Image (cartoon, rainbow over all chains, first blue to last red; front, side):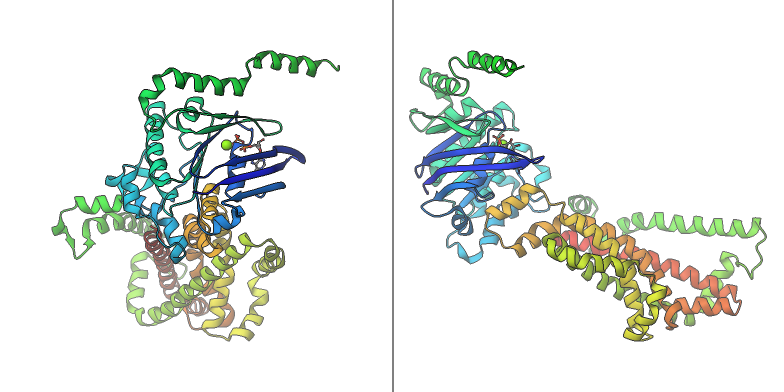
Length: 269
Length: 270
Ligand SMILES: Nc1ncnc2c1ncn2[C@@H]1O[C@H](COP(=O)(O)OP(=O)(O)O)[C@@H](O)[C@H]1O
Ligand SMILES: [Mg+2]
């Protein structure tokens, strides 16, 4: 449960000797204990933003803090849980040993890690504790990866399109599970997604990104009451929340804007 | 590994005498035995068809008989060579893994040390033999050195490829978890690299016997290589081919030994 703050963060990559501005001047504050979603078209820098928070990448400019400290400190104190798009389990380890991995790494520096077996029960895989990842479906593997991310009771939980590869039904079930787990642990959760309904269903607040350069174009509060259930998805207020996100992503006159851009691009010749 | 477990549970307990699965052993040994028989058959036919005189190449039966009658001398020489081959392979394996780990983690070390490694590898063993004999003597030392020089390279190249084969997200995961370099190496890079390393080791294992004999041709140490050289010098074709047969068997033993070590380490990994 740490606050995450970014101030004027920029990050470029060199692709074929040309600078690609993955993120430009991003500032945002995510108060502790909330559930936040980052949404935007692919290539707009969502993963880059998450990887900067996790100290996998360093920003070119600007500063990032987790609970008032630099990300590298939070990382070395094992306060960050990360769920990758692919489950990235170690194939030679059993489910239990994969979930135990962060505890092995932290050793005695983390005073009260979670009980791996309880985490496996939490994600509903008690019968598969001794199975290998290759014996599990994609959805089950991703649940293992969530359990693993929770092993050290992280203060922030970062999820990069964790359910992107799953079918709609499984995704729906996983979202409910994720909400339950988040509520039980009280961690600050940041979820990258390109699914509007997923963002509206899970988040307290959604940050909308646009590409070239990657930047935040809107922050939309989702005022839906908790706990959220599947019944909520049929309500009017859920539809309104989704519409607000759609407007922010495409613009109410998004089509007109795009036409203007194309016209401008062709004009000079 | 999962296969092995499920297989074992399907086999009735009575047939698994003290954990040793007789049926499974027979199944894995059968192709080897069949191949050996085929080999002797072809040998026999060649000797017959071309009327090869015994002073060029004796028949397989005669050769096997020589192995039996000269067993004392051959076994002593073979044991010497086999020991050197195994010891050299162990040293080569250790050096290969350490160098590969160094090269994939440090660009500076790669630029400084890799050219030296390639130079040692490409220098003809014949040319550096006097130097090796001077440094390591005429016994086991030079033999091990030659085996190391000949066999560490394929293992090292494969290990480097293996260390680079770790999935990026697995490495990033370890980083986010706050792992040390050593932990990343031990828990991710090495296990991901094991299949590659053993591909290299298996090919090194078969050439190690030949390398150990090559060392004896240079140093005159009393192993199977020297035995073959003496047999040739005295035109004793029966002794020569008996020793060649034994050296082939040794290469096979080395191959299955390295496969066995791979199986152990794969279990450790899990
Ligand atoms: N490691 C990298 N090297 C070079 N370019 C990268 C790298 N990571 C991301 N990029 C570039 O940065 C931009 C944003 O990528 P990313 O953050 O993955 O977007 P998203 O997750 O929103 O799809 C893309 O143009 C991508 O090509
Ligand atoms: Mg992405």
